[in-house]
Amino acid sequence: MKKIFSIIAVFIVLTACSGSDDEIRNNPNLPDLNFRFQLDLSFPEYNDLQFPGNSFATYNHGVRGVVIYNINNSQYVAFELSDPNHPPSSCSAMTINGVIATCDCEGNQYNVITGEIVEGDGQYTMKPYRVQKSGNRIEVFN
Image 1: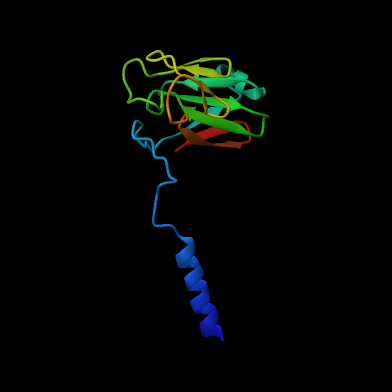
Image 2: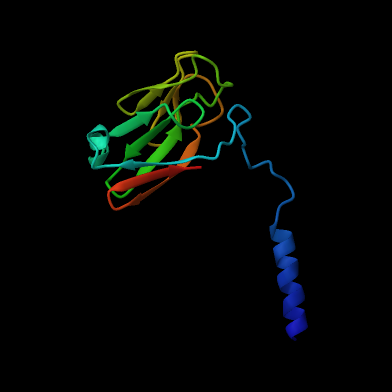
């Protein structure tokens, strides 16, 4: 009886796995970088991140920079600031105005809360990074 359950379990696992990666949409325009940095919210330059609805952009990490957005003091999101719908170039670093990130190359605009494109052409959303808050520090990493 135990052997039958083992065979059924293996069969279910094998049939549940898909051999196709059609659902995975890897962005060919942006490389996968390994990085990790911390922001200490007690420093004045990061003061805006202590309040929901504010963001902070740094151009020292990621491909062309990283934007961090405070959703509700316990949830933060971070996205790459290089336009995901074309290869990095001198004009692909996006600028932030409120909750909109704009690419100077083509004028594509993205929502920095969700990463979705709100104006322009493209099939890719902004590349997300991981964010973890611990005490008064925010850590962003890939």
